[in-house]
Image (cartoon, rainbow, N blue to C red; front, top):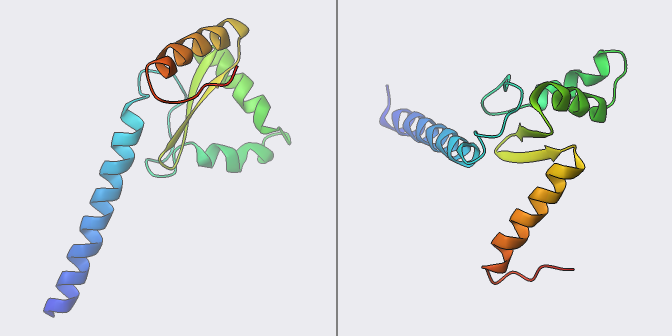
Length: 113
């Protein structure tokens, strides 16, 4: 095996390992929030979104409401390395805004309202 090919293979393997470590670290902050199991480590819940139209022509919001019924009013959704939190109850939205405002007040961010 040529040294150039070995070096290229090592670089690709290292890049893939770093990508996986980045995705794991980005998601670990939100693991305490309930949500459906991820069908793919790298893609997250994206395969669910691809299959949504195959099941009775449902829209994405219907799937989110089903998850809210199963996992509670606050649900975590991962797509690639991004985590989104879906909040479906007014009480949870109020608590979320109170927490975010208290955290934002201690930083240099300007919060409208």
